[in-house]
Image (tube, rainbow, N blue to C red; front, side, top):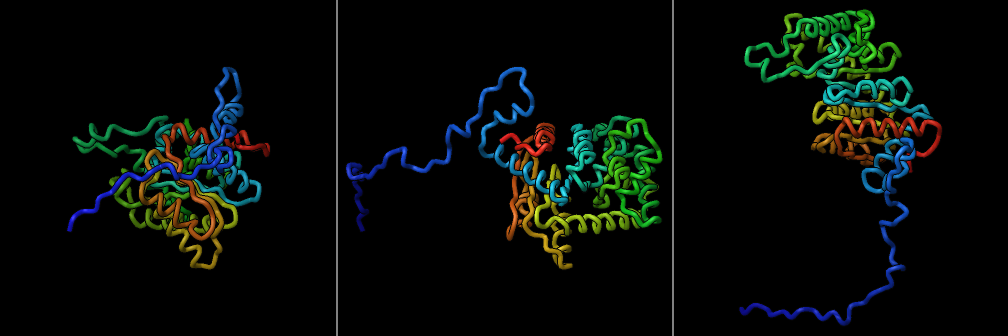
Length: 323
């Protein structure tokens, strides 16, 4: 069979319409405005273009303000990178202001938080230490975190509260930089979610797997209680955890719904410099599929988190979040 032959379409009959009559998505009212030296941070926020990530960031800030006004939880799930890039003071400030009402950490967060509070530094050179088998063998870190887990299991409290209490009792020189210590002092839920074998303290001779398991499981149940209260206006932010906390959050959500809690119509957001599969599915999409909104904000933590925090603080007086 011979192939069909085609002639180019004739454009003479194409229909047009006046440009001004067309609904358009982008307008000059939403454009950025040039920055003028000497302005305030709030003025800077007002210069940002009202598009894409800026619009999402403003929506997340507004959701947090609404949750704060109505007494709904604002829950932060943090990966260790957030602590390592120096953001503890920013997160602690949000907790002290009541803009963050609960925090969930992975095990590495607890390690870095303790070391910063104790000696003012953290994060060893893994490659250099690993060659001699010295990686992760800091005596105080392994001993104190494991003793806190053992004490928490004995007292019937979670890993996060046990370590926070231990830091308050120790009064290390940099306690003000401890998120765990701050949450314990303010009686704010701060849970630690451990996968045994992933953290340096699990290779320490003081490690008691039963105690670690008991305290981190209690923290999971405490987290589920916070998640159960997210419905009708709460907010969950996953910041820098690609696997562990998105999985923990999803299980806490299904448990709370299984027990009869109506966890719908809330806001979730994932803040990270790469949008991974699990945060996208387990934070941004699945939890709010039948009610609520999910946002993905892509950027470096050391830039994005202070920007969101500044937007929140500037808007605490009831004003707009820079819109």
